[in-house]
Image 1 (tube, helix red, strand yellow):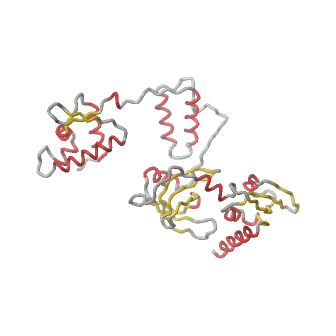
Image 2 (cartoon, rainbow, N blue to C red; image 1 turned 180 degrees about the vertical axis):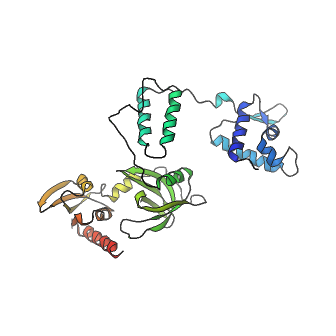
Image 3 (cartoon, helix red, strand yellow; image 1 turned 90 degrees about the vertical axis):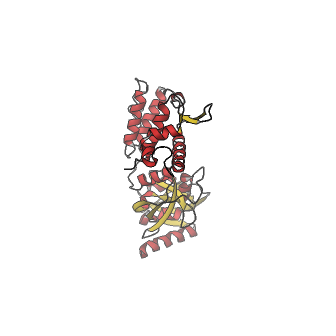
Length: 324
């Protein structure tokens, strides 16, 4: 039975960390069970080149994971490898009271997600490593109860896909569409904005950057093989993009009528509010790209007065929904 790669890498790392002198490829090949099982002893017919390729890949993988591996050439010209413990030991962790409290708050933020266990475990390890005894990170700033709601089933697979740089496919229903459509996306980043999660990535079907609201993803998020076809930008402006949808970054103003007691998010963005009576108020709100889609979500509680093109766009979206 073939030995798993993770076990092979672990055994190689332990050999390199445990030796007091550099070990040659020959010695490592004879010491690690996975190499013996796959290639046999040194000199086995047709196996040396295959072993050398695997060993170089394994060495590169360990270095990418952070292990410092030294290459040492002896007097007789033989090359050996070792990982000195002092080069691979993290410095002592020291946290003051404010830093410990900040970590405690960060852990509480994720308590509704599946990251809660990892966050709790990390804090326990930090306490064992010297977290100040007089600081309880769970009680610090108890007046604050931060939360990041993660109710969408799409969150976890998309988070992992962003981390691993894996393309995904999912069904997505736009605000003005009655039926979802399939989207092939190279996911870049997830961000929470005003209580909703959004994904930014490269939409392969449209050949451009797009932002998706997770609550509009229907069905399962499925991973796809292969690499990304578009470069990942250094900075992904998810919040700025979503803010432009809501008209928060625009210079123009729209005038709408809003049913009294309804549409709190619109009232929070309004620059002016006037009571009209008969159960209606008039609001002035910033007008930018995507405002029509946002207003449609409030249904019969909103009537657009100005500008004319915004009113026409909202009417067209409502008719599209009615036809669906």
